[in-house]
Image (tube, rainbow, N blue to C red; front, side):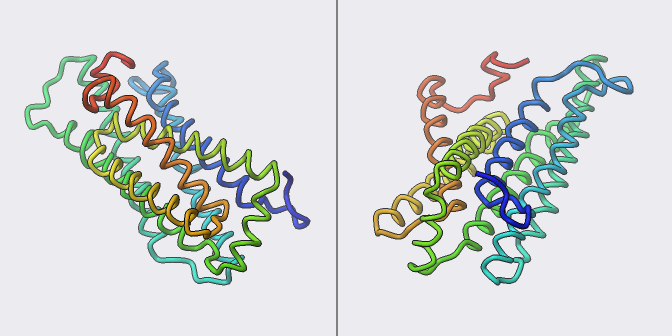
Length: 247
């Protein structure tokens, strides 16, 4: 799969980039704690900050490509989602750095403000933004049966299928992981169930799914698989850090 005649990346490749960027930003921000920069700043912090711009840019790139191709207006919900995602990641980054400082210096947080902003507000803002972006992107993709057949024929190319699959696996995993570590399972899990049921029901009715709808349906199924494994193994959904899997 290559860029089109005008040098533009096709939607499946953009979706693959979104999945890879999302998982890289989430995992890099959590796992890479080597000091880099001013006191208390880590390599993961820089990845977290840069990843926010990359992921929002990819969401917007996909949305603008779909809106242009389908001759549909760019949804206002996409702007709200971008704002919520950026603010949520920013709040998380700042609060997480303060949390690291508190752990290392023993300074008290008697009001629990770090926990509130880091583990509650920021994570729910980011997950709500992810849900909003998913709704925007699947709603932009072509809907008519004839257009659906054309979209499915394009998506049937081997390179497109691989790109959508790789992106969906990466995106589904990071959606599960961020839901567990951010304790947004009450929001993330029902949305995954609803999205997976919608996608499967659409396919069962003979409605062809384009690459974007295939991507999010596949990502929801991947997330549900990981949620099921983690929930059965841990008899619930504790954070990875509480289960001792990450520092």
